[in-house]
Image (cartoon, rainbow, N blue to C red; front, top):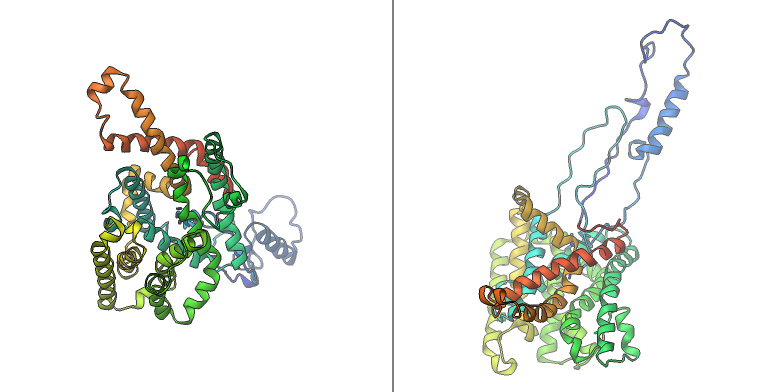
Length: 461
């Protein structure tokens, strides 16, 4: 699921025509042989001001820059996955996307004041999102129960999306929500069209619940044949609800940041020990919101500078305690769930993710880690960029890629050389073929994210 920006406008006072006119008695150009004509300096200053207003308005006294719309939130982030997929970034691939921190204004005005160059994209968050997506694909390939403990991808992606959402809400809330929804739904509709048609070919006929294939506020319906493809949509549904609730959540968080952050673990405790939500769309939605509420609010805490003000000892103590409780509960309740897989144990998932992601976010805030050195490795940096800009596409299509990898590998057995020299029975081989197919889907379908973000469609970002 899919990635905020800090773009600053610099206001400058050029009163009295500084840098635009000439002192009285000076000639703007070398003396020509023809007679000197009268120059109305007031008119010159007026015309230069009009030039500035048209081509570089930020240099005009009294100019106020209007807020700009987010560019891409790689939520899935921002999807968010991600991203953004809103880095929003607005990668909000937030699933929501990608925000570029390098956007600067240029002007042709003479001698513009020098401004501090804004920081580039935060490669620390971009790298975390890319690793999270790789871990998701690996988990769906190998089914490792321990994968969520080594790297809780979904908690990380929700925290990154929460950070980007808090940044985006510096603009009017309705505009931000509309931007997030616009970036999320077109890739979802494009992907869903193929899934729905395939399920209908395999004897599935939707009822009124097909509305959830239009706006996934609840789990979209489907048949068992297509379950492996559509079961991942819980993330998009949860992300969408967090986006809708964020204006209220952020306002509440600002009243008492630390208290609200800690209390965001209370709903999952209540659902586990006091009241169990029903086993339906409504109940599943509540459970997922409660499971990852802390991670989303933790994103607020990072953006608002709350984490940076906390004492390291207290943060580490809380994180280790949360991880310890989550791990203890997962391993001591295997008889109930059949495994210690965090995906099957919401209470353990909530606390393990809370502790793990807190350490990652606090390390960023306290040590100011930015992974800027990643840019020295051009190929790796390029991969991270693609992952963040195509977070929603990668998340949606990766299961279909893994499904198609199986019959494709079956055909390899018909080629004697492949049968002899390729490890066709290995899951690692299927993992590799899956990534090749994922790359194909990114090339074929990633342009939809560009269209959703009101950008010119590109084969690769």
